[in-house]
Length: 241
Length: 286
Image (cartoon, rainbow over all chains, first blue to last red; front, side, top):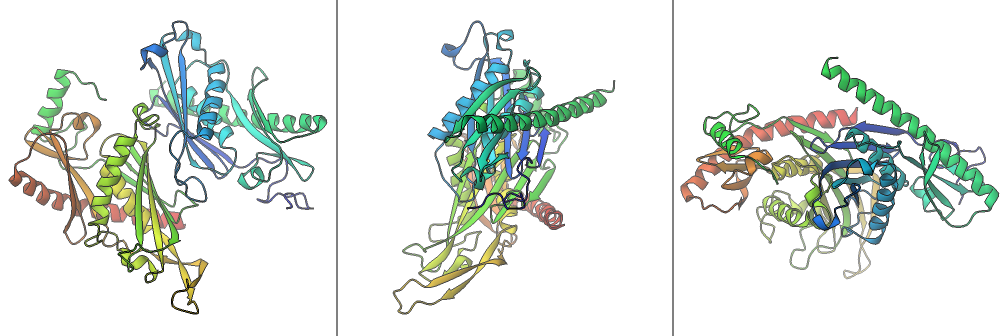
């Protein structure tokens, strides 16, 4: 199948190095300590953060750092074909783990010993790149909750189809079977914290594709920073100072 | 769970007794209701309803299926509710399953009526394409995104809004050669039939705190309840289903009184919902 037309356009009309429309909103779940909605094209996720708070299960308490937990779940209506999967299937567990490890790395857990931080991400619409969208939403939610972090974490995926590196794959491109790299970076420190790839790819091309994904992450980081700044200004205005 | 001191508990109970609740509402006043339709593009119909800080999403998906054995003239409707852990950390893992099951069965009772399908709020006969052979199966999925009390009423409202947003594709049937053969169907991508929702009831939950009852209780108020009765009432004022929760017993005369109060409240709620749904639809189209 042709994923990039001779004119250099992708199935949804994007250029190979173009990202989908991104949109973020802070404070979607008013009862949570921090929450955010993140959209990448048709992919839409909600993240909610509860904590830092008392550890619920005493045996898991850590005396020198905070306990970070994460749960990823998909709504029944999130995919094109309706599915009914029980909570906690293998894929969700794996993604929960990936998000937890990525976020734990950037949270300054040593500042909050004997406490617990819960991150819940809920996918409302899935159209490829849910992993990245979840991480971006979780970053915003953690920032909204005022949890001390080393840096923001942002994530973006890239692939390689029809001998062209493509940024931010959607579902159709994702299921094409080509290589798919998900990268997560700490934009200020300029370090990679998350890197996943399936399928095979020559080394020199890998470099290009990874570079592309990293550029995507940086663009998202700029957007997220803008949203956070706007939110802070709004809060400041409401406080009346 | 909500942790309240003795003083706070008295304050809530006293406020309800004096018809002035903590957020300034009267006993029978709802929080502001906000409806958005068409929020899930891949579904046949969907809606998001916010009541105060409670937020639920309902989606309707229609799939072609076969009518049940005993009911060749009726389509099938399934209701599943999922409590997302974003709403409450306690819903993590399997924690939300009990509440999900409770809400699903309560909604089933309120909207679909008896097993035979008699007295159902959703007209299942309109879902039949070829009697005994093909019908539409409606999958109604509810998701609790944020929970701040009164989930059942919010879910009922969201399902009502999602159904009125639902377009069921029109179907062309080519009859099979013989009677036993499965007829061929051609599903149109462009023509949609609007689902008739005039008979879909609204759900009103009355929560009894002390000697009085209130509508649209917050979690703090729910923690003080002795019992709660959810009554679903349609446009004509007919009761479509009743569910009682909570331990304390109720005097039968109180139940009847509650039903008549619920009838009165449901009229206002229904009008409010209809106008919200209409404005949401108008916004969705523009």
